[in-house]
Structures are given as structure tokens and as C-alpha cells.
Image (cartoon, rainbow over all chains, first blue to last red; front, side, top):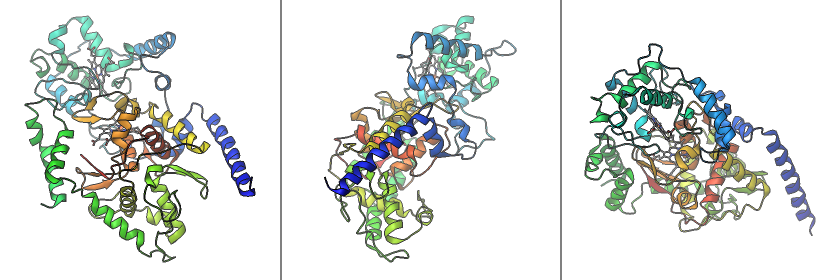
Length: 204
Length: 273
């Protein structure tokens, strides 16, 4: 073996050793590397890289692979965060709801922080039949209220889904709109009307 | 017709919904179809060629305090070899002691051979109508010289494996107000956001489909965009802060995507929405 190849081998071994210590420092991996790789930009601050307990668990597991004990913990914690509407009224204005569902902006570094956030529901769901540009990351919500009726149980279930999707489906891919303060109470009510109002385009 | 103008026209059609209207007949019509139509109309006439030509000129021009060209730049296959180099990136470089993707390696060559300060060269990382990016032009030139070559990433060096492992972990890292990870949008087959099809990037098929066409000419922006641009823009959609150029996470994700796409035949620069 030549001197230079010994050198390379040695360097490689040292590097491998130092990488290992870096990886060990990363608790929980890869949080430390994330901190080193980003910089704050406008409303998107560095604090957004830090995971809460649910995000950390749902990084390791999916809904399908989450161990039962952890699933129960996520559901319980998520359920306790759900605040029902202060006045007990679930339904707002479906026309405003449709606008919120269509709006994709909100909380990106490129968005105007003085404007209300959107729900971007059409990114993932089919809703009104007239809107053909809908995504498929979530199930179709067409005829949502028509199919379920306005029973208290149906209203409560939909409110929970919007407020904290993980209360019923731990590690759901749907954002926790109420819990994470993406949308306020009035916006959630307007979206509930979009889902349930018989005159809403969703139920035509 | 001028290709750039045609691209703008297509985008205007997309944005105004003219093409979406056609979708009323087939509700599953997507931007993919619109881009296929664009290709049919203009064939191989890819506006990225403008960037390639600019990059080629930059490569051979004596510039910077050292008045040198980049012909001695080592992209991993030896000084001056660009044919096939992109098909084996990112990789570990002994002289810098780092795993580098194409963009960070170009920075190394420009600073060391030409003596141009890093910050000067990177002032325009992502170009726009007025300010052109030298980095994007050089990237296009080098990438085009790997067309038809299969991606090959043996990950022999431990640092290459570590970069891959980091990228794999970041791909699933859920964070920010929306709890998004790359996997939220790119973890399942056959999904869309609105009408934009989402490649499943944790499978060979999906990763190949995506990675082999990047960098790409973006019709909606009239610009050639690099993989570093694509990644930082997905992080923006994820509501996270700004991804730093050449950071561990940028290199790690690139390595993860490239390795997952291994065997895929490069067709970049491609054309994207």
C-alpha cells in the first residue's frame, strides 16, 4: 500500500468517526442538521424547524405504522386541544367558506402576513363539482353534508377534523387548522357551512 | 415562433384557464398534458439551450482576478471532463473534504481557478428577467453533457452514505404550522395538488421521472431552474424558513433523490410547467 493511499484511508476513517459523533449529537436526528441548513426569512422563523411531540412521532411513523399505545397518546392529546365554537354555532357563511377553501396562500415566507390565511382545501380535496382543479391528497368531500346530514355527531366530527385532524386519525396528512392557528374560529365556521349548508356548492 | 414567447403563451393559457376549460371534457386533464402539447408543438426546441450556450461561453472565457477559464475544473471525472460528470454527482471530493452537488462544485472551481469571491459569484443564485445567473448557465451547460447517461451513485465514501441518510431522514421530517414533510406531498403514488401531478420521490420510478429532467426550463417563470432552486421552493411551500444554498440538507436531499433515481437515464435540462 502506498503512503498516499494509507493517508486517504486514515482520513476516511477519521471522517467516518467524526460523522458518527455528529449523528449522535443530532437528537432527535436530523433536527440539528436542519438548524444548520436554514435561515429565517420574513414570517418563516427558525422556530418552525422545531418539532412538537406529535410531529416527531409522525416523522418516525405513519398512521399505518404508529404503535397502538402511541396512537392513543396522539389522539388523546389532539382531542384535548379541540375547542368547540364559543357560541355553540357550527355553521357560518358558505360563500366565505368557498373563498377560504380556494385560497392557497398563508404562512409562507412569500405571503403577505397582513392578509388572512387560506385553507387551501382544494389543494387536497374535491369539493364543489364546478371546481375541476382539485387535488387528491385527501378524499373527495363532494356532497359532504348531503350524505351525512346535519346531525350533532356529524357536525362535531367535521369540526374536530378541521380543528385537529389527528384527534380521529393520528398522523393524518391534513394540517391541524385550529390547533396550529392557521385559521380562526370564524373561518372554521365558514368552512363548516361550505361542507354542510344545503345551498353550498358542495351539496349541489 | 420564438420559443420563449411560445412558453409565455402556454403559461398564459394555463393561468387563464383556457386549457382547464378543455379539461371540462376530461376532468383528469392535467398540466402534464399541457406540457406534452407544448412539446408536440415545439419538438426538441428547448429554451434551456439559451442557458447552455451562455454556460459554454462562460466555461471557456478567461475571467476573474486570475484571468482563467474553467477548462481545468474537476467535476469528479478529472480536470476538464464534463461528459457524464453530472450522472455521478453529488459525490465526495478529496480536495474540499466535502460531499458536493454540481452547483457547490462549480462554486469551488470558480473561486479556486478564477479567484472570483464566492459571494460575488453567488449574488444571483436564481436569475430573473433582468439579472441572469451565471451559476444557472454553467449548470445547464454541464448537465446537458450527461444526456443519455444513467445515474450512478455507488456511495463508496462514508460521507456520501451519511449525506444519503440525512436526506432520507429529512424527507420524512414533519414540521412547521402545516405539519408538512416532503413525504406529505411526494410519499404516495398518483397524487395531485390541484392539477399538478406529484411524483412519488421515495420510489425509483417516481424519483427517476423527476430527477432525470432537472435542472429544467420553467415555463411559468421563463427561467432555467436548478435542483437547489426546486428544493428551496418546496421548503417554502412547506412553510419552513429559507434553505441555505449548499447546506447539508440541500446536499443530503439531492443525494437521496439521485440515489433513489439511480439507473434512470438523464434527460436534463427538461421542460417544466
